[in-house]
Length: 195
Image (cartoon, rainbow, N blue to C red; front, side, top):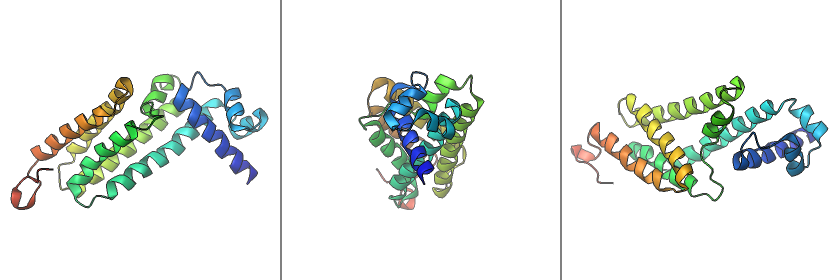
């Protein structure tokens, strides 16, 4: 139990520091200071900083996708669930500690030098695209739409971080609606629903 508690404390500190300041600017001593876990214990849990980065990204991925799914699944209409993805992005972008996509940020810092980090980023992006693919299939829309919506979402994430604004989610959402509507009518009897 003590080991599990120390691991969670280390991961909490890593998430706060890596996401807030960047991975390369944070040392294991910084993690020790924020987590209260001794340096010796930290290195027992994570023998290399890269392992801590991977564990941080894995844990964040699970929570990020769960939060997204909870928001999206609250909508009953299949097409509205697709648009709810962009609504959720806007909510995320408005959070006070939003600093962009943790995986894009991590890839920018370490993707060229750490295959383990690069693979963690690719796994997250694959899972996001597969989720969009399921939503697209449930809406009875062509599979290619999932990749198009992912590009809109990813672009919104990067732009929101650069602009420090939630508006890119709304712009991407409007583009998503146009794409969805281009694949066919969305309302009853073939009449667009006007949402």
